[in-house]
Amino acid sequence: MQGKYRWPEGVRCVVTLTVDFDGPSHETGRQLTPLGVNSHGRYSGRRGVYRYLDLFEKHGIPGTFYVPGYDAECYPQVVKDIHNRGFEVGAHGYLHESWDVGADEEMLLRKSDKILSDLLGTKPLGWRSPSGRKSGLTVKVLKDLGYIYDSSDKDYDLPYVVRVDGKPVEGMMELPSSAFSLDDFPFYKFSMTPPSEVLAHWQQEFDTLYNENGYFMLMVHPRSGWGSGTPARARIMEDMIRYIKGHAGVRFFTVGGLARWCLDNRQHFD
Image 1 (cartoon, one colour):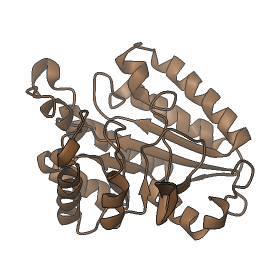
Image 2: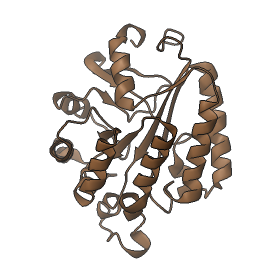
Image 3: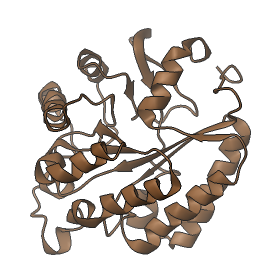
């Protein structure tokens, strides 16, 4: 596929900015009471998500928010506000499952889908695994739910048509995400990297992808603690947006919007 991709006329690089809600579901799923030292996820619903909504609106760009079903139950108005303010809401598990869900996988996928669909009056277009875990069943259930994309795999630098058992799944794209170099989690959770160094790293990644394939997806979490919801870390995202906008031929998409474009131009994404 290298070299065969095409973007919309006049576009050199497509950019998707994604926000993984990751509220108290993250702690509750690990049987931790989301209070005190374990209260970081509550920041998402109380402040972090709104900080990103305001930031995206300020810069006139789209964004995609991946919401666990449990967090939607805890903060229904926040999730409604994401949708009502014109941003995409994608599915992201129920309790931000980081364990092997086994026989419960289909139930959890359908449960999360129903929570978001009932709350917003419209179905999600896509899903991102809360832990990166997938099985042979995952795509089949997502397809049955009517989803048009998954954004969980880490195996390529460009979108591609989803395959199951080596066969293409018509009407469904994979929009790969990097949980290492283009995710705030490893920098703030493990290495406690200063925000200025995170920004420099993301800028270097963007420069390389801009010059190579023109596909850039960034992933942040609006939590406090190891997330990017707090002021200084959110400012780094604003600095990154300004940096990206300083390059010619860039277009921002929601992940669902980009998936639709790819499906409409499937011949470039075999």
